[in-house]
Length: 337
Image 1: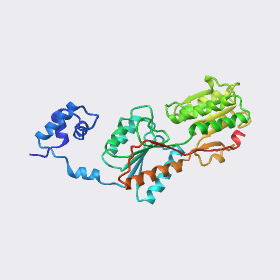
Image 2: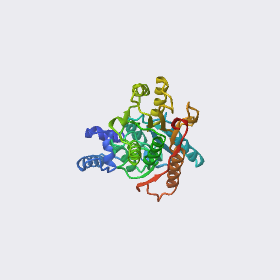
Image 3: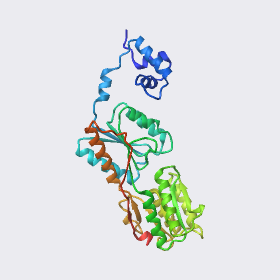
Image 4: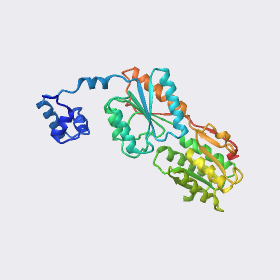
């Protein structure tokens, strides 16, 4: 008689193999009725879990996975670099995954990690408001997760963030103190806590200086750079165009620069710009760009340091909920002077 496998049980019960696997592991995601069916058949057929496969899962791979939503963004590349430096110094490998701002892709990546390919995961979410079930599956399999930047609100764990609201407030106040009367906030059309915090900082500066805002003060964009630039060109062509811009994302700051060059609007004489970005060549742009730079390298190294220290100490509880704030740095250059 051939060996009874999970696939064999699934076929007899007309269930997915993943459902059978989770039922055998007593997952809360599976109903008691289904668990009972699975367990009874497993006993009847004398099913024995593959001890070799389990051993492989329990072995430490000395590998950490990092999942980012946008590999092109300089911020995420610097986070990866910070993690890589710490991993290399401690004999760990780092595997990088890109979710491309897509929760479905993020889920596929996570499912691929459930078998123990990595010892731990560091991630910035594609979308904080969508399902988090796949993140809890990692925790159920004792694969620690640390979140950074875009964090999971409803999943416990360490969360590394920056002072986004305060940083946006500082950048906006700078624009207003330099004489801007009609500023515009350029944000990405997602529900991330990061974007919302930056928007709050923009509003806070206007309220403090008693400068009115309107619905036209806030623009939301997608991830198509060509389309974003076209929208901004139309905005800057108007006679009542804004005289100040706070770009909440690097790609929007660059799209604004291109649009202003195309429309021949002068920076900073006619429009002043401050942008969130970790671009290392911001001072080489024409004119040099005023930036709010997140401490990306430090975020990455801090995440890796905590993980590796915890992995070495088996008593570490990665499920404890805590938030670590590492401040951003505002640098004023010619684009806003």
